Length: 81
Image (cartoon, rainbow, N blue to C red; front, side, top):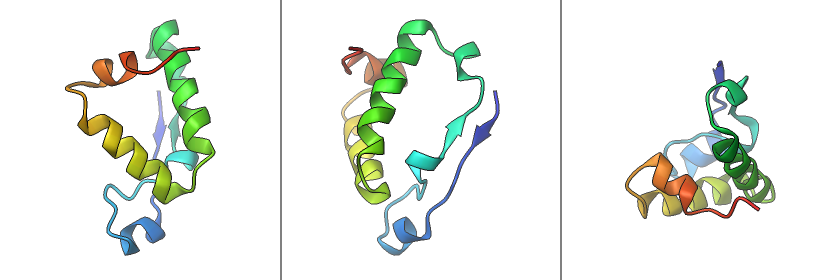
């Protein structure tokens, strides 16, 4: 898969790092990299994050990630439905 990461100057100005615009960044062909269950959870996560401004999305993501030990734990902590 190809990963396209879009950086956001507004996040840098607010000292939010990494300064990634989550809503505009992504991976092509992620269905080849993730299980069906993981993919469904990623889609749920994107739906939630897409409703937020880039700063809010990154802050929420960082907060939730800091409370889990791994990406798998993070995805498992989310509702897939």
